[in-house]
Amino acid sequence: MADQLLDETSKFVSLMITNAQQACIREVGVVSTMITAKQLAEAVYAVLPGFPVTLDDNYYAIADIGAWNKIIALDWTSRKKYIADIWDCDNFSDSFRSHVSEIYNLNSAGAFHCVVTNNLQTINKVGHRAVLIVAYDENKVLSVYAYESENEGIIKIEKGQQISIPVFGTIWNYAPVDGEFN
Image (tube, rainbow, N blue to C red):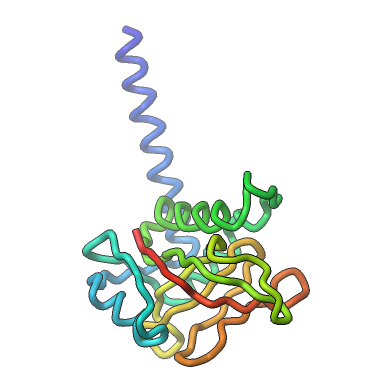
């Protein structure tokens, strides 16, 4: 009897989660397209030539940047309080990437390690992690964005251009070292 009740409760909870997920996808207007790992890598290499990136999946679900901007606006990750070594840059990045995969079925938000400078002073060496988002831009071209999930700063990465994002009233410059999509 207890096992049957647990099984029924589990089915009910699963149904509720699925319905909530579908409501989030509809609310944001996520229309995803599948691309291959090769296509995703080519988009990254087009703006970051020679950048080492690990691709753990064969296919990636992407959306347009408008949907991503809505996801970012609704996401609660940036509302968490920064706690050094406990809840810091890697946790912000990992949390955001997990949420968009779990809620919106998008696995096209990856992470990149980078050296961060501010006014030419090193803020954080290779341990800093931010988010790379592969999405269709306004012109329906596959593009790559750098996103700082700690404060919701986002910028389209352009080949040969410095990656700079306003963070807490100052400009952080990112020098990517490596990345991964999983």
